[in-house]
Image (cartoon, rainbow, N blue to C red; front, side, top):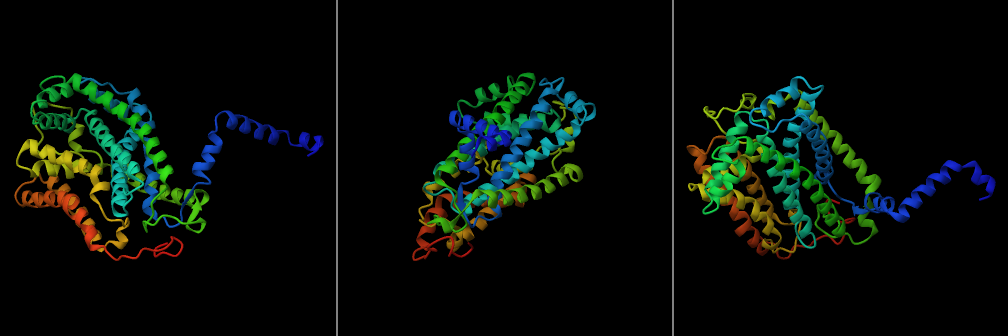
Length: 410
């Protein structure tokens, strides 16, 4: 290129020079291109793989709206409810941002459960992706803790009594239970100290989740994505670059998810807002029905279905902890449930039991719901501890596709 040509395109030369200078000292541009543009991805990923991108975007929205709400929130028993009312009625667009934040919690947990189900169904927890699975479960636990802490903050009737029920459940732990309850509540009942601690816990966990997401994505990019066939890519024909194929697919998924999100925020607010929580906390008046948000109902159903209070708490926590053992409980060399008929039926039973436990929690495990809840609890743990290890015996002689390009469902 001649000097005249260089003078004709000074902007282009300067732009390329800045990016090259930056990339030589901090290779963010080349790293982004390598991990999100040229990154080779299995060619047959279906719509269930969209939920990773959806969860990332919703997390960003939750953090942005949460910081705004924190600017106007008062974490005291006397001022919390009034500050939330002021956000909704006096702060410009405060009602909208709070609605987005509250609906975002429900939508985030819904997408997270679907993401988890996809991992179980397609065997995304199997080697070499154990760290992807384990970091994802750590995220699940952190998000659930953050969601519960956030549920307490409005300090309405359900917020107060939800914190009280949680404290009594923790109190059932032998030896350390009373100390833990006192530490969380700062006294014998929820009050100023407990509200302040829940506020700090909610904010710290929210940003800690962002950091663990980075670790989760890094672990995913080390091993590569699983796919519906559960067969490792064996050449260039089995993969496509992430952009434009999956960036456009994720964009479409985000648009569809945003439409559902908007419908919930503007037309179905009663789905995510508890009417009882629009009354200020009253320690002297217990609501007729104390129940958590829908995303905690299956675990609440487990808690109520077990006769012992400590046993119910142990089973509820164990329902999450057992998921950490899944990579070692499943001994089958086959990943995808598409080639595992027995396991596919077991997964259907697991989903039915999880939904049933939600209804059990909704109806407080009374009458026939108590029996249904205990059957569902037994099946839930039997699925992971008995059926999953034994399923490998029914899958001998299964022939898997040689490649993604020529496999079924590619």
